[in-house]
Image 1 (tube, rainbow, N blue to C red):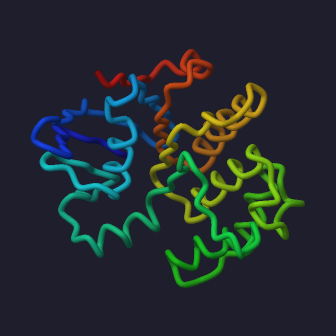
Image 2 (image 1 turned 90 degrees about the vertical axis):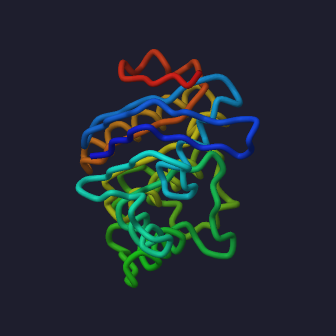
Length: 209
């Protein structure tokens, strides 16, 4: 579902990131690990189309992502890539349900309320839809982030340190939800993490050095 080749990126002449190739099929999971400063989040942002590498290839389905214009990339991301960011960037004035509806409206021009409610139910937070994000616990906010990332049935689901601010119980729940929902919705799942609590749960790993 997503594959990369020869991805290179640099913020300056002094430091160049050379990222390993990856190939992740629908419903499968790859863990991307490495010490701080090795470019884990940078790699995820490249895969999400938020940063453009200096060279290389990224293919999602049949689409050569790097051949798209900036405007085409934004549109493609909205309907094909779901991102669970390390920090939840919600619209503070909107309720949880409205934040999810906004995700579908921005991508498709329509508010998919039924899908938003279904995801909240699947994530066991259906009774939180009318609340503001600030009224939720950190664990609940992370579940809403997952719901938002899945709103448009993406082919690729990217998660940046999804357990870094969670206790052991909630960290395990979030990982279980990410993996089970990625299988259900047939999305390739890439998780960027340095969290030792979850590393042993996955056999498919890429370590940035």
